Image 1 (cartoon, one colour):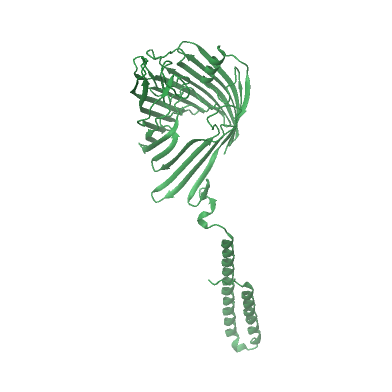
Image 2 (cartoon, one colour; image 1 turned 90 degrees about the horizontal axis):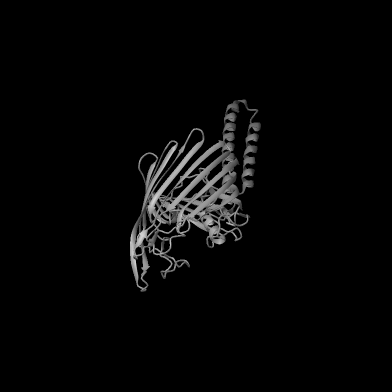
Length: 467
């Protein structure tokens, strides 16, 4: 096509000339009866030509307008942001992007002391250690928005299948800070890619179990299994609504209790050291659902290794290792009455980094003869969730965790964790789908190996806007 602009005025003039000719010709020959039939045929031919020319004119005008619009656009078609065909998310080139998450405002009143934005058994321990007695201190009130969460998911089609990406953030960053006073800072919780049956990146551990009800308290119930870490996971179908996961995960973050008299250092503590990371943690998990029933079973294997200073005082150093393992079973059942029952239980040795038990949640300890031993831990969680109305739901969640008493520990055992529990009772009101208001009572209890115990409790009000 040439570079000269399309002149619609000239086309219109040509059309008018043709129309004038079509009108004049029948007037000149109307008095000639012998030629009347021929004249009518010629007029019909002219009418057809005029219609064809008008149609061509309209097409050329549309082409001109389209060209002008394309020339004014600063980006090519494959760069334009557009709405996805399914109405979910938006497209950037060939990539579908979905953005969601929630805004969460928490107002919290602590009865005994200032426990900041969260409440767990460790807060009861902190109260005990700081005040020297059970349930001391004055009440404290604070607010936070740090649990607000942002999630971005992407999907890009390739010749080998869809390539997915996911990143999730909250605002407990720089470093992890649960206080009311510090400013919210972004923190990456999860970040991974998916391709076919594979997941590569940072996600909830495959050993995690979320068979418990919704809590407003950010900590959640005692004895829960959770850890977010880098991993490679493969998921395979094993029947209708049944999957099996296999994963190799980051073994880092484990600790060893080494005793007060050993010359070691871990995060500023003189009675603990970090495990060495030589072999990935290995996890297998089965998940299945059928109607109102869903179940999960998982197992983990770990190889724990550490440098152990000679407890005889000679200053010599040695290495020892021990195998850790864990077994988990959980499930949920929803009744026609709107009642959902959820339970989970775990038992293991050397699973301290996965098992939510405060103050001494280490994986292993050093014995009096200089050997490394895995710490035995077990616990359970039970939930009753009841839908009272289409907009009103209540949850009662109770969790309890236990730790063995390492009788042959090289150090003192009196202040080590023996058992702890949490109770959460809440009422959630959702007047419209994206908005929820909630109020929750939380109580945490803790007991040391020497029998000394403490408790902490608070009331929390939350506003949640899901988007």
